[in-house]
Length: 421
Image 1: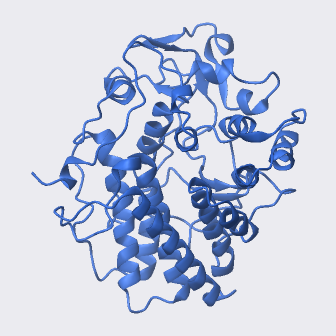
Image 2: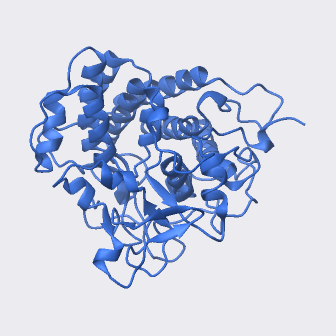
């Protein structure tokens, strides 16, 4: 998937306040530790954006492996095929701690922004929206184990429940939306990266805020709120399905590259499509054929990859280079969220489902409903972090394939650093 980004007008430098890069070690800074309190608003905003990309590849692999969208066949680290597919998860291991810590570092930046006496309404709306979004990513992994809503490092304070975290996310998004509306059509007092092209003023960023609010409302079965939020978002049923907000990358000095990208025809790759992504695909569905390729057919010198009693021949072609953007939220998802909300209200969602199918040159579906909607989301939003969440939402985790005796759909404990004793 590629986005038709405008020519880069803004560069996203790394900010030392938040950016932590390196190998997937177990050593990661305490997300509640102090950072530079005197940082400028611009540096904190830029740092929040840069921080959202830190360990994003680990986060997406975690959700996508557990959701049986892909395998990550890494002989040097068998936790991806062992712990992550069998369990139990290690509360001290990087698969648990790294995404958690990365998201809370961004939240810390947002809290510093909100404490800055020079922050205006637009900046407040930005900070609350990004803070809410990162809390959402935390709870999407932690699920019923909850998350922290205290940010002072006191691990004796009870962890918030899933319901409490969602209440906080909703409150932040709604307060952020109000701030952005108060800021009006003026420019932000800071600069965003090209990943926010088209959403880089308070009024347009508010549309991004409402898009995330719609996603949250759907997760909560709050269908009317979802539809209202979608009406104030950038949803466009006749528009480009790829229009949206993205993480952007470059090979520039001190910048980050897209850690999800691998050359699908390299001799050795690790990220491989789950075989059921092919067996369950419709004939002629470009959402399948554009996102994976059969390596042994594309290059007869390549054999099926097998590791830890798992095999796949499907290389990932979602990204074509290490500088391709990664979606935060796109118009295609919004159209399908509208279908989902209508189904939740007792409808069939068929109009929106068929808008998406028509855009991919597929014949119109005839029945609609939840099963059809989940099929469309699976193929439209492949590797965007939704499959596991959707199957969990609708109590369908038992429908996900288990490839070996002893495999399970794992759950994630709180990091050991967040629990007393």
